[in-house]
Image 1 (tube, rainbow, N blue to C red):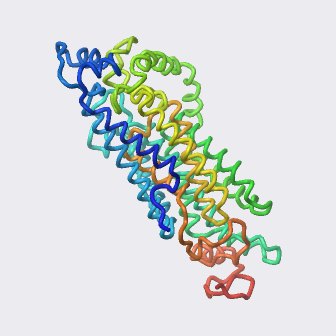
Image 2 (cartoon, helix red, strand yellow):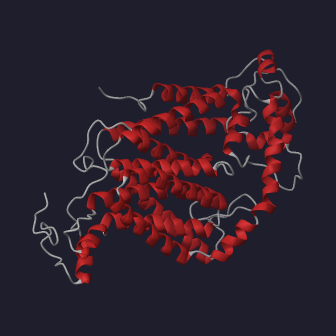
Image 3 (cartoon, rainbow, N blue to C red):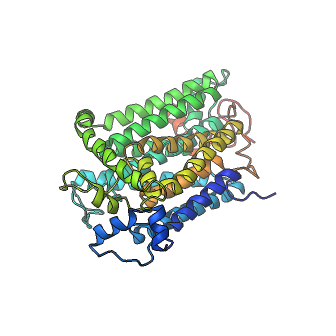
Length: 448
């Protein structure tokens, strides 16, 4: 039977309630109803718009145009999540990770080139409207670029590990060069290159929240994945990680990174002030919130700090959801998150194919952004929200059909790969001829 949505009733129903709640914030209400459920809405609207009090129908959103945009983005990403879940049921999911890898290479290259040129304009042409903006590549804010990268990098690495399991061999009867060649799978090298390039770009941004998020993702993948691999393959995985770390550190500006993290204590007072001044907003709008996407407008009234800088975000995505959505959005969002975590655990732990590593990589990306959201609100950007929806589908999708490659067990010792990169490596080693692609090196057996 064909599955609809995510396959989990609680998750799908909570997502529907979340979308419906965002649109309900735009519903015009009579004065008596509005005063009962959200008495401070009219006060904020009058203060921001500088208009006299009237009795016309008003929604609970203090800025309807912003709520229309936010609700539209939310609806689009929920539909994207369901659509990708349905798409992944029908066949191979690897193409989606390859697309993410290619996009990551493009975004990272543009960002590095812009940083090297010293240009503060997007594409070297468009200057940001906001003061103090720090564009990086295609993103106006370097922390928003970091959000995209910390989600994409673990997904690419997870696919690379899956390729390692399909191609690598530790058979002691094989010469060490044959075992080494089997690791140098062409597609795995491409995915690792994408991951390394994105990590280097992340280091150049000096985004502290991004680096902490990527560290959390690495710890998650290692802890969960190490239970599924044997001792021999841990050596190859360790070699991959060590080589990647050496390359990344070689390009890192360690002095700038140390200086950036030393500023954490000095700059944390600003975020604490934002969080503290957001609490009265939550108290006044605890039921329905100020409206999705309206935090900046509401804080024009509730900000008590120096108005040299206006608070346009809560610097904590969870706090901002509560402020903008109240119980109306916070309850379905919490139910959706808990339902997703439960479904993700079941789908990941029951997967005995190489797709297990793709799921783990995608889950690592989501862990990274959940950690970063303690300090940032990068998922407000449509591109980041769309990537998060795709990764969520990668984690929890149900498989109706499995390709021959998907049937490969997560722990396997197959014949070594004889791809172009493998044959080139073998030629350089001078031990294995680069021809006869149907014959496995040093075995005399033909590949199926």
